[in-house]
Length: 511
Image 1: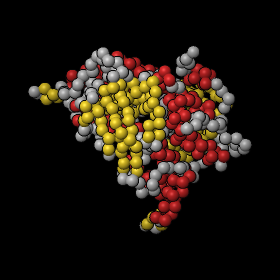
Image 2: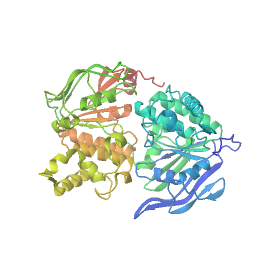
Image 3: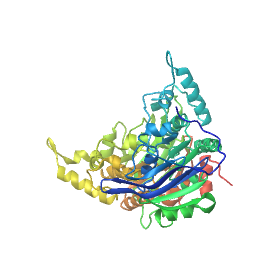
Image 4: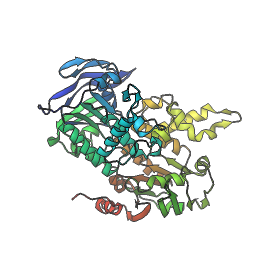
């Protein structure tokens, strides 16, 4: 039986601690004697770059992995967490960054998977649906509990993941990147839920690469860097500069759009594009756009604006029901995804785990997957040429891995994202489409990704990337396209203000 949240009379009391916790994976040291406290009824936010050790520490606290050394103190007593189930029995739950839902099951069945509500006659599906509906209402999401998860967009799937964790009634809830795919309104709803939980004594550990967003909900901040705790402080003593300084040792700056060269001819032309959703409504509504070689164009908009649907239709993943897509003047109608890649059009998808990587393959196999045709010699493939491509991609994209044979799951989120980008750059594209390229990666990895994009643009690559973070438009793009309800609502140069961009998207701007 899972413990229920209880009122806290000792607000701020430490309920769970890691003491001198270290973790090694072979010769790799992921944590170096970390001390970490979780306070009753408060939010402790854990900041750090990809690979800093955040997820490793949380997996130890959630019973998923044992520490190599050190101890865990729960309610003042040392405990050994033997499994995630053991941790849940003690009231500790985790929401993982990467979704762990069964896409073919309903929302209801995903929430209660492995914890079904049983009666003498079987599973009480009606009660499960009632609870699922209540959780969706608390999270301000109008989702039918019987809807298959695969029919939901990524942000809604994230909401289901959160609802599943909330259904356990944990007293310590670890949230690893819970807002990475959420819209602004969904984030607001989640924050309301978090404050309701903390008011009832629930302790929250919150991990996010959205630094300004995380500051809104933080009571205590802890920073990890290279497996070491570099700083901790209460909310009153920190700001954005404090976080970044302790994370990366310098002020974070995406830089500025690459300059010093002229754009070439039009590389990609989208003419009168229409994409419809299942209901028949236009999610992309007669949109036209041109991008020149060497130009970086940002498409900004809220969740549901049609950004993802547009990029997927251009890349051949979605259906274009009207309009044309021209690559260097050649119509791509009727071409498959592979044929479009061969012509020079590549897409880095929003969901890297589901659509960008093959989890059973190594880093090198993932990097060479889209270019495998270049290694075929008769009935065989040239392992030498493939190895050269992999080694070159690892070096150029600065992927932190021991070598190409490493398992893709051994990499941090930021380095996995670099693998997806490196895989598509290895196809030598003329146009690169990136859908939310910085989702779930830290400020350091984000800088490296956009540095790489700028470098390739100088070499003549046309780049279109979509984002829901206005700062990414201002720091990188030559031109900013704002989408709203499937249409272009505004277009700006690099010098546009944050307020004007947000206003054009229909987003409320804080005073």
